[in-house]
Length: 342
Ligand code: DAH
Image 1 (tube, rainbow, N blue to C red):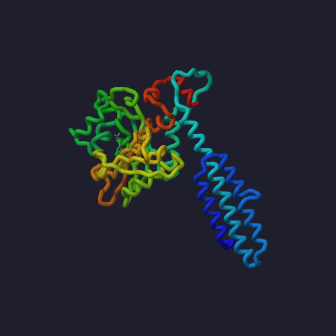
Image 2: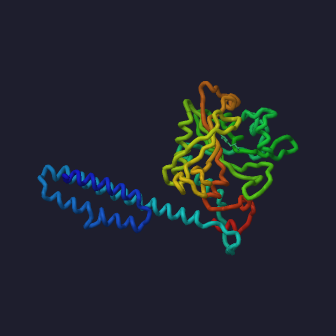
C-alpha cells in the first residue's frame, strides 16, 4: 500500500469508527488512537520524512488535510454526544407528581412555552414568519373558509363552545390559514402557534384546551416533496439526527391530498418497541396540499398558486419529550408540576 493509500484508508476507517461511538470515554480513546502523539496520523507524518521533495509536498498536504478533518469530526461528535446525553437526562427525568418539591422562589416558563419557542426558532431559521390569530373566531374562519360546508360531517369531530353572538372558540389553528391568505401577499411561509378548544370528555390524553402549531407555505410549484423536505428538517433539528418519514392518507376538508405524517421510531430504528407500539413508526402530524377551494376563499387563483399546510399537536410533543403521562397537568396550575421545569 502506498503512503497515499494508507492515508485514505486511515481516514475511511476513522470515519466509520467515529460514527459508531456513543460515549465520551470511547471518543477520547479514538482521539488518542488517531490524533494522539503516538497515533496513526503522527506515524504517517513521520514516514513523510523519507519521501522526495515533490512527494513530501503533495502527500504532506493530504496528511494535514486529513488530520484537520478528523479533528473537526472529533469535535462535532463530541458536541453531538454531549447534546444527546443532556436530552436523555431531560426525557429520563420522568415527572413524578408525588415527589415533594420546594415551591418557593421565582416563576419560570411553562414546558409548553419552552418547546413552542424551540419549534418557532427552527421554523424562523427556515424563513417562516410567526402569525397570531384570535381565540374567539367566526364560524367562517374556523370552518367555512376551510372548505367545511354548512352541514359537513367533519364539523362533528370538532365540536366546540359557542358564544351568544354566534362566534366560537377556535377548534384548530387552521383558522389562521384563511386569515393569512387574506392578509399576506404570496409567496409566504408562516407558522401560527396557539391555544385551541374542543368540547371534549377530559381524560389523561384529552383536554378541552390544548395547543397546536399550524404551518402554511404558499408559492408556485409547491409539492408534496417540499412538504416532506420541510418536515425532515424539523425532525432532524428536534432530534439532531437524520430521520425517515412516511405519509399515509388522511382526510381533512381543507387539504387535497391529505396525509398523516409518521417518522421512523428512533428508539428501535423501526424494528418495533413499546414507544412505537411495535409498529416501527411514530405519528407526528396531519398535513397536505392546500385545497383549491381554500386558496379561492383567500382570493388566490389555484391555477397559479399552490401550497402545503400542517398542524402540529404541541401537547403530545411536550409529553413525549419530558415523559409526562397526563395532559391535565398542563392547565392545572399545579406548582409542583411547574417547578419541575424551572
Ligand atoms: N386542523 C386539523 C385538526 O386540528 C389538523 C390539520 C390537518 C392541520 C391537516 C393542517 C392540515 O394544516 O393540513 O384536526
